[in-house]
Image (cartoon, rainbow, N blue to C red; front, side, top):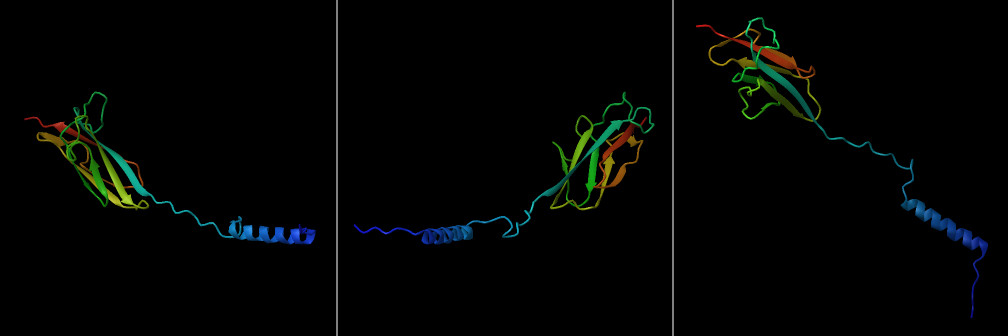
Length: 148
């Protein structure tokens, strides 16, 4: 039987060729630039709007004054949506949520919220708020019953 022996020089050569081939198949840190991951996101901003019955007509919501249901809110602005069981009048608790959604990054823009009181009520606060989406907002509208 004829056996051949691998000499140390041949063994080192085969080992170096094998390591070199493996290095070509393996990504070694620093060989190639790592791409920065792109994070896809949308912009969501929410605001609270409230209406209450201003019993003393002072324009400030006192602890004893109850929320006022039935106020219609109108919202103007790009990407603005009103959310709730009924998108126009305030809920029975007098609070209403507004969600502003825009694709991608938040866009600086102006929004206007206006309130229309139920029949036989008049405003005791401004009925229009204009604001920017970079400022958190909780708009409050006061209304007083009209005496007849």
